Structure formats: C-alpha cells, structure tokens
Length: 64
Image (tube, rainbow, N blue to C red; front, side, top):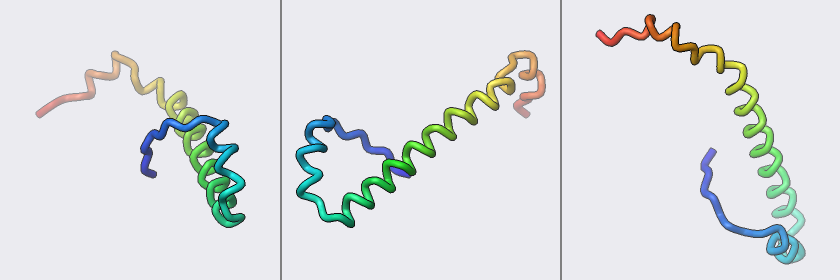
C-alpha cells in the first residue's frame, strides 16, 4: 500500500464529493475502509509483538 500524505481538510472533501461520480465515491469509501483496517491491524500487531523487544533476549542476536 502506497502512502503519500496529502494535506486536505474535511471541508475540502465535502466540497469535492458532489463533483465525484457514484463509482468514484464508492471506490474512495472502499479505500478509506481498507486504510483504516490496515492501520488498526498494524497497531494491534505492534502491541502483540512488543514482548519481543525484551533487552534480555538480545543475547540471541549474534552477528557472525
């Protein structure tokens, strides 16, 4: 997923929405939901793996 931050306000989106076709609005809605789902799952996985960041476990990290 490409992430290219764009500075746009909610008010600008409200202004643009009536100009979009029904198909474009549906695609935008799907992409927003996909982004939110991915973002939430990423955050959840970060907390699930935080226990792996235990400094005592670094003894297994050997550079040969």
